[in-house]
Image (cartoon, rainbow, N blue to C red; front, side, top):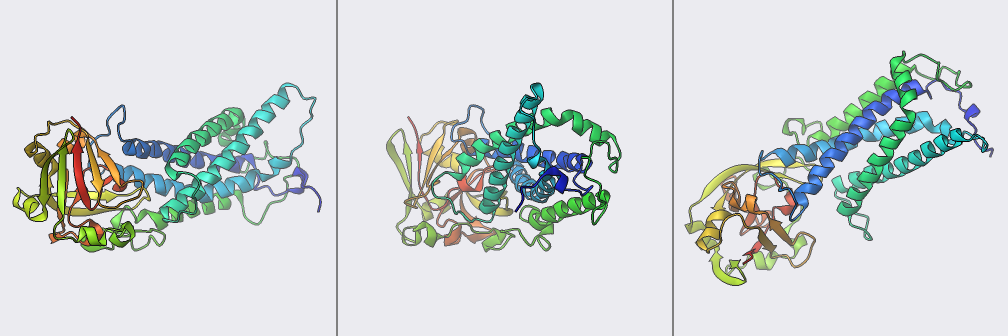
Length: 386
């Protein structure tokens, strides 16, 4: 087998005119993914320097759904972009080229980092959205967040290096050959416009195939949406009681929620005790990092009422502990702003029916604008510091 050379790639489709146009939309997708990913990371910090807002209640649902949808749209865009620029990988550079050598070296280094980070981000992001977790040696959330900065940094370097070519290509007609390689003379099986239209269509199909996880009226056509509204009360279930190992403890008639203030046990509230308190109903979504969400009508007791009755002052963070004995989110921190919000409930019912065991019976947390992994199920205790 001979080593490929740029002259071996003769299709006019492999042109800066095509690469620049696909690159614009790929950059928009990556930029949107990056910004919405920062929002998701911020929402999951236990004690952020700037508190995550409680409103709008649908905020996290929208940003995380957009994060996953644009990530899916980026897949066909990235594949086409890599196919178009593939010949550049085999260009030889004169080692005596001086400043030109530095520019080319910087360009290729940024491309290598960008391609590697992009493939990793999209592959692991899609696996996470599909709830397939093949990794064991690293934390998805931490690694995904760190490499997002690497990818966006490499993208900015790449844009800066290629900006003159990008501007020239976008400023000319798509069929202009001014910036084409000298050997790219074959017409190809389709026109450049047809290739671009097919690329946009593929990205659109990717969006439609996944957006139903967030947009209910698209669920009939979103064949790749992993959660589409099935489940008690129309709310899907990610983790069952059996998977959490709480089937016995959560169904125990003697269950009681412990309320601890400053290290002192102030109250033990059984299910009957909670139902005897003033009940409230809120319409709030469950929105998960995998990109799916569903609206639910939840009823229960305001957590602020329970804490106030136990002697806790407002504005305090609350450590929420589940009956499950293991898992990254067995314990979560509910920031004071969320604990004080009247929409934050110790939910007992969903859609007018008692919570099913898999939905968190006997009691679960539900709060506005909060990632689903932090909407703790099968509550065991609430703890406020001194």
